[in-house]
Image (cartoon, rainbow, N blue to C red; front, side, top):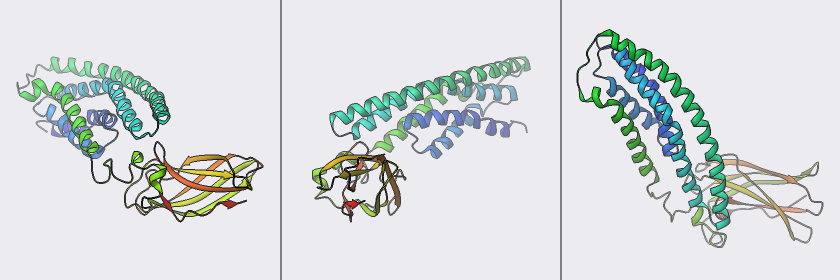
Length: 302
């Protein structure tokens, strides 16, 4: 094939995949399908005017090398984006502090992992690219001085970052389902408001058992809000025979997010106290207030 079209299209998949990982980190995995297609086209454009196979390979492998070395930077961006999102959804100062610490710990792990992957992948790709660079020089074929040939590498990297910035901005823009006044926003619902707000969840089943010195609460809850809900936790509260509160256990429900009309199982397991006689369940956001729930069953007796 004269201009090696197939080589350009297929080999461009390699930098596109690694750059898409950078894009996913920088945007919190928003619109990955769209991002991959856009980045793939940019990679193809970068080498489109090349006519000699070694020059084509060198250009696309060089982009892959740079994409690997950018992974730690993208992981740092991911940590800041995730931290801002989680802390913003936290309610009290204590919750915000806990969210910040948790994000810092998780972010350090992600950055470290991406550093190792990026370093190893970048070094391997550098060695491979260097061999193709030498072959390209030895070929003696002069490539046309086009805009994409001269500036393709720099503009491709800039393009990926711009795509991530635009996609992240669009994804975080207020919408009817994600604006501060929407009922499924964690910070918008407080325990005091829950009594007056329309129910977002419906308790379907609820069972409390004791077994081998453990208290287990199981059941199912339905999303009746009409919107996707993320970070939903079940809270099991336990009481003595006189209805005095003893303790509570919480856990994420099984489906995250829980989609409109979807029924998700839930389960909490905690150490038993012999004084515990009854239990009840409620729901909350992982970093927010109580979620209004209807048809909540009364305290279950063991």
